[in-house]
Image 1 (spheres, rainbow, N blue to C red):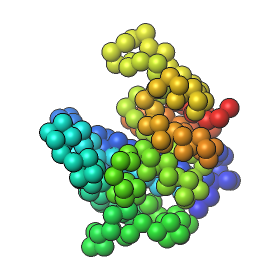
Image 2 (cartoon, one colour):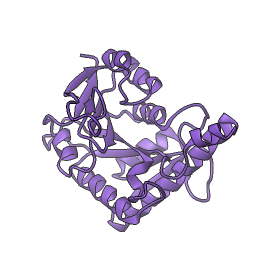
Image 3 (cartoon, one colour):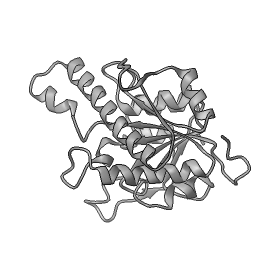
Amino acid sequence: MTGENNGLIYQRVLLKLSGEALAGEEGFGIDPDRAIYIAQRVKEVHEMGVDVAVVIGAGNLWRGRIGLHAGMDRATADYMGMLATVMNALALMDALERIDVMTRVQSAIEMRSVAEPYIRRRAIRHLEKDRVVIFGGGTGNPYFSTDTAAALRAMEIGANVLIKATKVDGVYDMDPNQHPEAEKFDHLTYIDTLNRRLEVMDSTAISLCMENKLPILVLNLWDEEALPKALRGLKVGTLVDES
């Protein structure tokens, strides 16, 4: 699918979601209503003529640092988190298919009964066949975050942009929920983001994007107009690139 004739500036996107996006008000678990809301946002983008791939975190089900504080082995804690991302991927796939969006889940950790193994060429073929692809299992390796997995998969599938969907409308110099005077950035370079230690994505993910000139766009997932506007090139959120 291509959006070149629809006034779109991005034809293929990787959407990075936090696990908390699926959580209910308690901040834990999977809320089916939240899953449907996210699925509807993805469907709207998909119907604009954009190839959509998704990476979702696991913070709503498991936080590795909790295990680490209890003395758990780091690799074991990370593998648990990767398995949790597959659960979230399946929940989002179910929500998408209930609203008639063909979806495939690919996992970096092989579990053929519930998901396809991650194969780059197959993922690209699914996108070409007008399917949404959800990547679960992180990178398949411990010590790497789902941010890094998102950057890696975005480059592997030839995405034009990595969209980090959050609860705020961009990147600020401090937490806007605690500091009303916080300054929002409309644009940042990769180097600025790294030097300021801004919580856009982890440093490995940002470095990967910088080395491969993949722009990162941070926007508010809960603003229903944000994603469509961004794809049409309107000023939304915070853009991180090399310029």
